[in-house]
Image 1: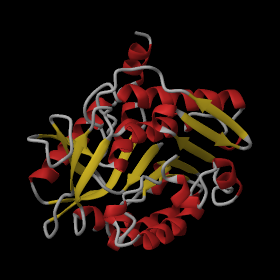
Image 2: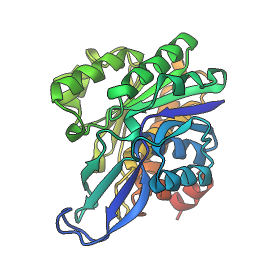
Image 3: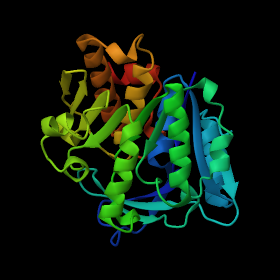
Length: 314
């Protein structure tokens, strides 16, 4: 069985020194993109993994497709389009490893995922689908909806990362309206503490769980360096971040989502996990995501389970 991620893959140009983008003198090219990152984590952790995306017919697209091949992510649903471009993100890091972004995204290949691309998918082998909020616009919006509608008919687990990027949308109102259009399809949601109020109108996770998020099986409420809270069926697990030397937080949230999905798919009954199982899932995702921050880049920082165990036991 397999995990299918739909949405953007892009080039992260990461600043070579600390500071704002206007002050950085050079950038290192890394593969990135929220959903592509999750596809790579799922592959690292032993799942058959697909990425459904569109890349430009350009050198950046060549680079990204080669990364996917090297990460053992199946490229059967990666299309290349000559009349668009592969999206780019310039990333500046401050002294704590936190990021600011400058995107070249509007009109890019990530927003040109077509219904024909979705119709190629063999749903029989898909156990989970993951998507995020960046690419649910333009042509790609209807393609996402088509995929999720079929997923729900088949009982496929659907995971969603809120992952807000306001500067990629025409207005906050349209952004919120679009996200809420997708929420009924979602079984697992990852929402950060700085995203909760925009999504639900409250900063209180308990209030959100009783209203906008009430229908969702697993709520992954991440709090950066303060750890995470994972909710399921009335149970909650609160985790703390282990003390590590943080170099780069790029892709850490995706590592959390990807590692949680990878582990929950190995639970015998996803709908009825015990408190002990939930604790194992939450702590694994927290520790896995934290260890990725000790290296630079997103995909290049992800680990197999054996590599993770070796690092956590150091």
